Image 1 (spheres, rainbow, N blue to C red):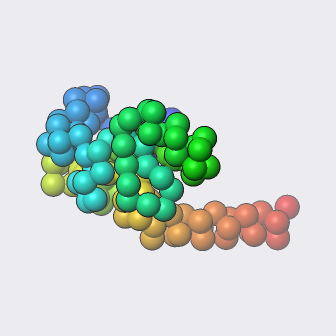
Image 2: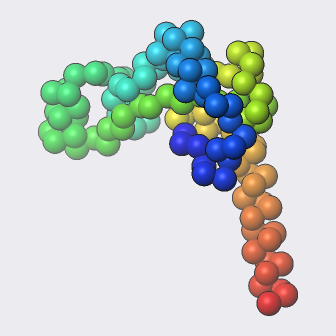
Length: 122
């Protein structure tokens, strides 16, 4: 996931090197489900490929929805300042979103609560 501009200062200056080290440690695949980084997968299925001809067949002939898998580095404690190797995992979008699900729910609740407060007190 891209770093939001408002959070950029929370990351260390050598973040790109840290990210590369974690990616190398993971073997360029998701550390939770082992799907390779930058491969293509049919939505809802475990089948994946790097073959663009196969992707074209899936999308054009079979009319399947295909997504490219892009792995990112996740902070297990959700604190960008904590860049210890034990706190970082290289995860695909699906695993990263699953891992962060409760945090996203909490933020959504807080956002809705703030929105209601603004509506009640213009």
